[in-house]
Image (cartoon, rainbow, N blue to C red; front, side, top):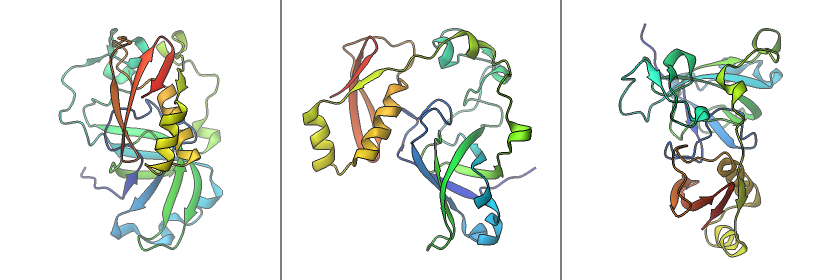
Length: 226
């Protein structure tokens, strides 16, 4: 089977670092799906406006190497304990395919690039190739009472994010961020983008976001943008 992209994803992330570890956990994070020329036809999307969520099948295109082991270390387990690759959502997989559920914000039907789907809550890097799009249907796709393995046993704690007033003022006045984009940044940082084995409060991390290089440090459960 040979597959080729039907669309490309556009997001605030130009690198893997900082991207939410699952779709939906940063619900206000905006992105858009732009189709390749072959599929820039409104007929391909007809009826989509009646759905609220979509499934995206995509590629971990930024991974320079594929899986090298049948065991992986999920961040949810602190990055130290191993589970089987098929019992995880590790990006290092035999076929490097990702699956994400995203919420439709709105659809632009007529643009210079054909119809564009604006979505919320994606966990994709800018430029990610999308191989298929399917509507999310509750009767088949929703299982709220299902067990979730090690995810059920380890609570994920969000960080408290502090952006000092002088930093926020610079982000808005000099760098052109809006209140909405700053809120999205705060939600992304609250999910703790650090490797889970790194806990040094003196270490400064850098994360690209909307073309900016955001530096921050973490002390305990508090993250401060510097």
